[in-house]
Length: 222
Image 1: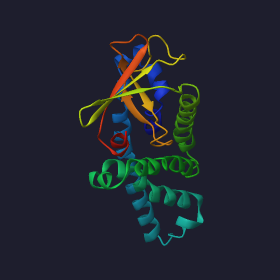
Image 2: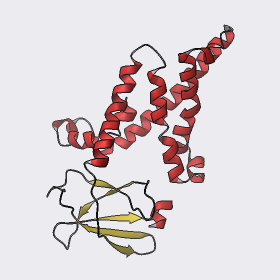
Image 3: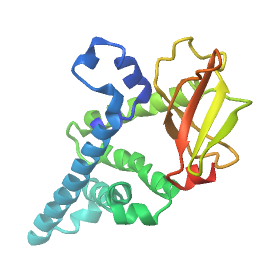
Image 4: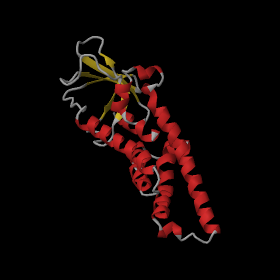
């Protein structure tokens, strides 16, 4: 549940403006996502191993491919390392480009769908509802809270940094409800969105700027 709910950025931004923020740090939900991702990744592998061990010892290993539970569990077991390991194992992170790791991470959608059919218990509610909330939140952010910046000004900061300046689009509130934005530069990639902290442009009214340090393939290209 928390793997999907922690990535509902629009819902989290709303919660940050409520009294709930006194008990929950909605401003750093990525740590929650990472923590529960590691926990679920480990639990999935152990859960699958002992199920297959039990079926093997009982001469029922054919349940792995004859039953919905077995097939869905096998699929989840195979794709779980592809989802988790590239994001948490340093040796793999260094060797795979971000877009590859991000693409593999979206196999979590397949993972969630397989678990909906894995058992007749409450998995349907525990996985399906958070996954649906994530999907609705993502589509809302992509189509409703998306702004096209026609003109932007880039300023080099030394050898490894750049500042991005732009005029606030018409659909922005005078007082932004968030402290970061996702940026997509189509001349670099139409499929990569990267989060950066924003702050008011100190010398221009109704302008925003953000500072970007060269730390990966996308930022180096920028």
